[in-house]
Image (cartoon, rainbow, N blue to C red; front, side, top):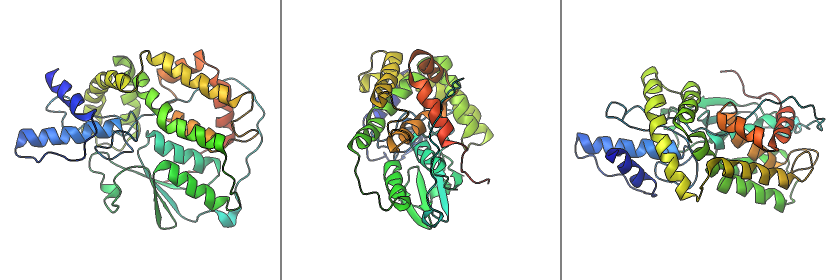
Amino acid sequence: MRRTHSLYSHFLVARRTVPPCSGISSCRVACEQKLVSSALYSSATAFDLNRCWLPLRFPFASTASNSIKAGVAGALSFSFALSTAVEAKEPPSPELLPKDVVLYQYEACPFCNKVKAFLDYHDIPYKVVEVNPFSKKEIKWSDYKKVPILVVDGEQLVDSSDIIDKLSHMIHPKNKVVDEEETKWRRWVDEHLVHVLSPNIYRTTSEALESFNYITTHGNFSFTERLTTKYAGAGVMYMVSKKLKKKYGITDERAALYDAAQTWTKAIDGRDFLGGSRPNLADLAVFGVLRPIRHLKAGRDMVENTNIGEWYQRMEAVVGDSSRLPA
Protein backbone atom coordinates (compact mmCIF):
# COMPACT_ATOMS: atom_id res chain seq x y z
CA MET A 1 0.00 0.00 0.00
CA ARG A 2 2.85 2.40 0.84
CA ARG A 3 4.39 1.87 -2.57
CA THR A 4 1.07 2.21 -4.35
CA HIS A 5 0.31 5.44 -2.49
CA SER A 6 3.65 6.88 -3.53
CA LEU A 7 2.84 6.17 -7.17
CA TYR A 8 -0.45 8.01 -6.89
CA SER A 9 0.85 11.04 -5.07
CA HIS A 10 3.73 11.32 -7.52
CA PHE A 11 1.69 11.06 -10.67
CA LEU A 12 -1.55 12.79 -9.95
CA VAL A 13 0.51 15.99 -9.88
CA ALA A 14 1.78 17.10 -13.26
CA ARG A 15 5.55 16.82 -13.61
CA ARG A 16 7.93 17.68 -16.40
CA THR A 17 11.14 15.97 -15.43
CA VAL A 18 12.15 12.42 -14.60
CA PRO A 19 14.56 11.73 -11.75
CA PRO A 20 17.86 10.26 -12.88
CA CYS A 21 18.33 6.55 -12.41
CA SER A 22 21.07 6.38 -9.85
CA GLY A 23 20.58 2.71 -9.13
CA ILE A 24 18.32 -0.25 -9.65
CA SER A 25 15.69 1.08 -7.26
CA SER A 26 15.61 4.59 -8.71
CA CYS A 27 15.52 3.23 -12.26
CA ARG A 28 12.51 1.19 -11.33
CA VAL A 29 10.78 4.20 -9.81
CA ALA A 30 11.43 6.25 -12.96
CA CYS A 31 10.02 3.45 -15.09
CA GLU A 32 6.96 3.25 -12.86
CA GLN A 33 6.43 6.98 -13.16
CA LYS A 34 6.38 6.75 -16.93
CA LEU A 35 4.06 3.78 -16.95
CA VAL A 36 1.54 5.23 -14.50
CA SER A 37 1.28 8.56 -16.27
CA SER A 38 0.99 6.88 -19.63
CA ALA A 39 -1.66 4.63 -18.26
CA LEU A 40 -3.69 7.56 -17.09
CA TYR A 41 -3.27 9.74 -20.12
CA SER A 42 -2.45 7.72 -23.20
CA SER A 43 -2.54 10.64 -25.57
CA ALA A 44 -0.33 12.72 -23.33
CA THR A 45 3.35 12.89 -22.69
CA ALA A 46 4.58 10.91 -19.74
CA PHE A 47 3.90 13.81 -17.41
CA ASP A 48 1.20 15.87 -19.09
CA LEU A 49 -1.68 14.83 -16.87
CA ASN A 50 -4.31 17.22 -18.16
CA ARG A 51 -4.73 16.11 -21.76
CA CYS A 52 -5.98 12.53 -21.90
CA TRP A 53 -7.90 10.27 -19.64
CA LEU A 54 -8.03 6.90 -18.13
CA PRO A 55 -5.75 4.77 -20.19
CA LEU A 56 -4.05 2.02 -18.30
CA ARG A 57 -1.11 0.05 -17.27
CA PHE A 58 1.13 0.23 -14.30
CA PRO A 59 3.84 -1.33 -12.26
CA PHE A 60 2.39 -2.85 -9.16
CA ALA A 61 4.78 -5.51 -7.93
CA SER A 62 8.51 -5.64 -8.61
CA THR A 63 7.99 -8.29 -11.25
CA ALA A 64 5.35 -6.15 -12.89
CA SER A 65 7.27 -2.89 -12.94
CA ASN A 66 8.58 -3.27 -16.47
CA SER A 67 5.54 -4.81 -18.03
CA ILE A 68 2.51 -2.76 -17.34
CA LYS A 69 1.77 -0.15 -19.85
CA ALA A 70 -1.21 -0.30 -21.93
CA GLY A 71 -3.02 1.83 -24.25
CA VAL A 72 -6.05 3.50 -22.76
CA ALA A 73 -9.54 2.47 -22.53
CA GLY A 74 -12.33 4.50 -23.48
CA ALA A 75 -15.95 4.37 -23.16
CA LEU A 76 -18.86 2.56 -24.59
CA SER A 77 -20.80 1.18 -27.48
CA PHE A 78 -23.87 -0.84 -27.13
CA SER A 79 -26.36 -3.10 -28.86
CA PHE A 80 -29.84 -1.89 -29.46
CA ALA A 81 -32.91 -3.13 -31.22
CA LEU A 82 -34.07 0.17 -32.57
CA SER A 83 -34.87 1.06 -36.13
CA THR A 84 -34.43 4.74 -36.94
CA ALA A 85 -34.21 6.33 -40.34
CA VAL A 86 -31.14 8.50 -40.75
CA GLU A 87 -30.10 10.63 -43.65
CA ALA A 88 -27.38 8.99 -45.71
CA LYS A 89 -23.95 10.51 -45.43
CA GLU A 90 -22.37 12.26 -48.37
CA PRO A 91 -18.75 11.18 -48.96
CA PRO A 92 -16.35 14.00 -49.92
CA SER A 93 -15.44 14.55 -53.56
CA PRO A 94 -12.76 12.01 -54.55
CA GLU A 95 -10.40 14.78 -55.69
CA LEU A 96 -10.42 16.23 -52.17
CA LEU A 97 -9.58 13.01 -50.40
CA PRO A 98 -6.00 12.46 -49.20
CA LYS A 99 -4.17 9.71 -51.05
CA ASP A 100 -2.19 8.15 -48.20
CA VAL A 101 -3.30 8.23 -44.56
CA VAL A 102 -1.53 6.42 -41.71
CA LEU A 103 -2.75 6.51 -38.10
CA TYR A 104 -0.33 5.78 -35.26
CA GLN A 105 -2.47 4.82 -32.30
CA TYR A 106 -3.36 2.79 -29.24
CA GLU A 107 -6.45 0.77 -30.17
CA ALA A 108 -8.34 1.68 -27.00
CA CYS A 109 -7.30 5.35 -26.83
CA PRO A 110 -10.41 7.60 -26.82
CA PHE A 111 -8.64 10.39 -28.70
CA CYS A 112 -7.43 7.98 -31.37
CA ASN A 113 -11.00 6.76 -31.70
CA LYS A 114 -12.20 10.33 -32.21
CA VAL A 115 -9.98 10.50 -35.28
CA LYS A 116 -11.12 7.09 -36.50
CA ALA A 117 -14.77 8.08 -36.16
CA PHE A 118 -14.12 11.05 -38.46
CA LEU A 119 -12.22 8.92 -40.99
CA ASP A 120 -14.85 6.18 -40.97
CA TYR A 121 -17.75 8.57 -41.36
CA HIS A 122 -16.14 10.29 -44.33
CA ASP A 123 -15.01 7.00 -45.91
CA ILE A 124 -11.36 8.05 -45.89
CA PRO A 125 -9.21 4.91 -46.22
CA TYR A 126 -6.42 4.72 -43.64
CA LYS A 127 -3.74 2.37 -42.48
CA VAL A 128 -3.14 1.74 -38.79
CA VAL A 129 0.15 1.30 -36.96
CA GLU A 130 -0.43 0.02 -33.43
CA VAL A 131 2.12 1.62 -31.11
CA ASN A 132 3.71 -0.46 -28.37
CA PRO A 133 3.16 1.62 -25.22
CA PHE A 134 6.42 0.40 -23.66
CA SER A 135 8.98 1.05 -26.36
CA LYS A 136 7.00 3.39 -28.66
CA LYS A 137 9.45 2.24 -31.32
CA GLU A 138 6.82 2.77 -34.00
CA ILE A 139 6.95 6.54 -33.46
CA LYS A 140 10.65 6.98 -32.74
CA TRP A 141 10.90 8.81 -36.05
CA SER A 142 8.70 11.61 -34.65
CA ASP A 143 9.59 14.34 -32.16
CA TYR A 144 5.98 14.10 -30.99
CA LYS A 145 5.70 11.25 -28.49
CA LYS A 146 1.95 11.08 -28.03
CA VAL A 147 -0.85 9.39 -29.90
CA PRO A 148 -2.71 9.88 -32.13
CA ILE A 149 -0.33 10.86 -34.88
CA LEU A 150 -1.84 11.00 -38.35
CA VAL A 151 0.40 11.16 -41.41
CA VAL A 152 -1.53 12.55 -44.36
CA ASP A 153 0.24 12.42 -47.72
CA GLY A 154 3.55 12.67 -45.89
CA GLU A 155 2.53 15.48 -43.49
CA GLN A 156 2.43 14.76 -39.76
CA LEU A 157 -0.69 15.93 -37.92
CA VAL A 158 -0.99 15.74 -34.13
CA ASP A 159 -3.59 16.29 -31.39
CA SER A 160 -6.97 14.72 -32.11
CA SER A 161 -8.98 17.95 -32.30
CA ASP A 162 -6.38 19.67 -34.50
CA ILE A 163 -6.19 16.61 -36.74
CA ILE A 164 -9.95 16.66 -37.22
CA ASP A 165 -10.00 20.42 -37.87
CA LYS A 166 -7.35 20.10 -40.58
CA LEU A 167 -8.97 17.08 -42.21
CA SER A 168 -12.36 18.77 -42.16
CA HIS A 169 -10.94 21.86 -43.86
CA MET A 170 -9.21 19.64 -46.40
CA ILE A 171 -12.36 17.86 -47.52
CA HIS A 172 -14.71 20.83 -47.02
CA PRO A 173 -12.56 23.78 -48.17
CA LYS A 174 -15.56 26.06 -48.79
CA ASN A 175 -17.01 25.62 -45.32
CA LYS A 176 -15.81 28.72 -43.44
CA VAL A 177 -18.71 28.97 -40.99
CA VAL A 178 -17.86 28.46 -37.32
CA ASP A 179 -20.64 26.61 -35.52
CA GLU A 180 -20.52 27.81 -31.92
CA GLU A 181 -22.74 24.99 -30.66
CA GLU A 182 -20.53 22.40 -32.29
CA THR A 183 -17.39 24.03 -30.88
CA LYS A 184 -18.88 24.15 -27.38
CA TRP A 185 -19.70 20.45 -27.32
CA ARG A 186 -16.42 19.36 -28.85
CA ARG A 187 -14.70 21.17 -25.98
CA TRP A 188 -17.07 19.47 -23.52
CA VAL A 189 -15.94 16.08 -24.78
CA ASP A 190 -12.26 16.83 -24.13
CA GLU A 191 -12.71 18.72 -20.88
CA HIS A 192 -15.51 16.80 -19.19
CA LEU A 193 -16.77 13.60 -20.77
CA VAL A 194 -13.43 11.81 -20.93
CA HIS A 195 -12.75 12.52 -17.25
CA VAL A 196 -16.02 10.91 -16.17
CA LEU A 197 -15.25 7.64 -17.92
CA SER A 198 -12.21 6.30 -16.10
CA PRO A 199 -13.71 6.35 -12.60
CA ASN A 200 -16.56 4.31 -14.05
CA ILE A 201 -14.72 1.64 -15.97
CA TYR A 202 -12.37 1.04 -13.01
CA ARG A 203 -15.08 1.51 -10.38
CA THR A 204 -14.78 -2.00 -8.93
CA THR A 205 -12.08 -4.64 -9.12
CA SER A 206 -14.20 -6.75 -11.47
CA GLU A 207 -14.82 -3.79 -13.78
CA ALA A 208 -11.12 -2.93 -13.73
CA LEU A 209 -10.28 -6.50 -14.79
CA GLU A 210 -12.94 -6.36 -17.50
CA SER A 211 -11.43 -3.14 -18.83
CA PHE A 212 -7.88 -4.45 -18.82
CA ASN A 213 -8.94 -7.62 -20.56
CA TYR A 214 -10.15 -5.44 -23.44
CA ILE A 215 -7.04 -3.28 -23.33
CA THR A 216 -4.55 -6.14 -23.36
CA THR A 217 -6.48 -8.02 -26.03
CA HIS A 218 -6.48 -5.09 -28.46
CA GLY A 219 -3.16 -3.42 -27.64
CA ASN A 220 0.32 -4.09 -28.99
CA PHE A 221 1.78 -6.22 -26.18
CA SER A 222 4.05 -9.19 -25.91
CA PHE A 223 2.63 -12.25 -24.15
CA THR A 224 4.44 -11.38 -20.91
CA GLU A 225 3.39 -7.73 -21.06
CA ARG A 226 -0.21 -8.74 -21.71
CA LEU A 227 -0.39 -11.09 -18.75
CA THR A 228 1.30 -8.76 -16.29
CA THR A 229 -0.55 -5.68 -17.43
CA LYS A 230 -3.98 -7.26 -17.11
CA TYR A 231 -3.74 -8.12 -13.44
CA ALA A 232 -1.28 -5.61 -12.01
CA GLY A 233 -2.68 -2.76 -14.08
CA ALA A 234 -6.26 -3.53 -13.06
CA GLY A 235 -5.29 -3.46 -9.39
CA VAL A 236 -3.50 -0.16 -9.66
CA MET A 237 -6.15 1.50 -11.82
CA TYR A 238 -8.87 0.50 -9.39
CA MET A 239 -7.08 2.53 -6.73
CA VAL A 240 -6.06 5.34 -9.07
CA SER A 241 -9.69 5.76 -10.13
CA LYS A 242 -10.49 6.82 -6.56
CA LYS A 243 -7.91 9.59 -6.88
CA LEU A 244 -9.41 10.65 -10.19
CA LYS A 245 -12.83 10.93 -8.58
CA LYS A 246 -11.41 13.41 -6.10
CA LYS A 247 -9.42 15.29 -8.73
CA TYR A 248 -12.49 15.90 -10.89
CA GLY A 249 -14.96 16.41 -8.04
CA ILE A 250 -16.91 13.22 -8.65
CA THR A 251 -18.79 11.79 -5.68
CA ASP A 252 -20.86 9.11 -7.40
CA GLU A 253 -19.30 7.61 -10.54
CA ARG A 254 -22.45 6.25 -12.10
CA ALA A 255 -24.46 9.37 -11.32
CA ALA A 256 -21.79 11.47 -13.05
CA LEU A 257 -21.80 9.14 -16.05
CA TYR A 258 -25.58 9.15 -16.35
CA ASP A 259 -25.63 12.93 -15.95
CA ALA A 260 -23.11 13.32 -18.79
CA ALA A 261 -25.21 11.07 -21.03
CA GLN A 262 -28.39 12.96 -20.23
CA THR A 263 -26.62 16.30 -20.72
CA TRP A 264 -25.63 15.21 -24.21
CA THR A 265 -29.11 13.88 -24.99
CA LYS A 266 -30.63 17.15 -23.82
CA ALA A 267 -28.26 19.08 -26.06
CA ILE A 268 -29.50 17.11 -29.07
CA ASP A 269 -32.97 18.39 -28.14
CA GLY A 270 -35.12 16.04 -30.20
CA ARG A 271 -32.92 16.15 -33.30
CA ASP A 272 -31.43 13.02 -34.83
CA PHE A 273 -27.99 14.48 -34.20
CA LEU A 274 -26.54 17.65 -32.75
CA GLY A 275 -25.83 18.53 -36.38
CA GLY A 276 -29.49 18.01 -37.33
CA SER A 277 -30.21 15.38 -39.97
CA ARG A 278 -26.51 14.50 -40.17
CA PRO A 279 -23.87 14.29 -37.44
CA ASN A 280 -21.46 17.17 -37.03
CA LEU A 281 -17.97 17.12 -35.52
CA ALA A 282 -19.35 17.14 -31.97
CA ASP A 283 -21.48 14.06 -32.69
CA LEU A 284 -18.44 12.30 -34.11
CA ALA A 285 -16.31 13.31 -31.10
CA VAL A 286 -18.78 11.93 -28.55
CA PHE A 287 -19.29 8.77 -30.59
CA GLY A 288 -15.58 8.24 -31.08
CA VAL A 289 -14.75 8.67 -27.39
CA LEU A 290 -17.52 6.29 -26.35
CA ARG A 291 -16.88 3.60 -28.92
CA PRO A 292 -13.76 1.84 -27.50
CA ILE A 293 -15.38 0.30 -24.45
CA ARG A 294 -18.71 -0.57 -25.93
CA HIS A 295 -18.81 -3.99 -24.23
CA LEU A 296 -17.93 -2.86 -20.72
CA LYS A 297 -20.35 -2.85 -17.79
CA ALA A 298 -20.22 0.94 -17.46
CA GLY A 299 -21.43 1.24 -21.03
CA ARG A 300 -24.21 -1.26 -20.61
CA ASP A 301 -25.38 0.46 -17.44
CA MET A 302 -25.29 3.83 -19.15
CA VAL A 303 -27.55 2.71 -21.97
CA GLU A 304 -29.96 0.99 -19.61
CA ASN A 305 -30.30 4.03 -17.36
CA THR A 306 -30.22 6.98 -19.78
CA ASN A 307 -31.66 8.05 -23.11
CA ILE A 308 -28.39 7.97 -25.06
CA GLY A 309 -29.03 4.60 -26.70
CA GLU A 310 -31.14 5.76 -29.63
CA TRP A 311 -28.67 8.47 -30.61
CA TYR A 312 -25.79 6.01 -30.33
CA GLN A 313 -27.50 3.50 -32.58
CA ARG A 314 -28.16 6.20 -35.18
CA MET A 315 -24.48 7.08 -35.05
CA GLU A 316 -23.46 3.45 -35.56
CA ALA A 317 -25.78 3.26 -38.55
CA VAL A 318 -24.62 6.46 -40.23
CA VAL A 319 -20.90 6.06 -39.54
CA GLY A 320 -21.07 2.57 -40.99
CA ASP A 321 -18.21 0.16 -41.44
CA SER A 322 -14.63 1.12 -40.76
CA SER A 323 -12.64 2.48 -43.69
CA ARG A 324 -9.47 1.05 -42.17
CA LEU A 325 -7.33 -0.76 -44.72
CA PRO A 326 -6.26 -4.34 -44.02
CA ALA A 327 -2.73 -4.74 -42.71
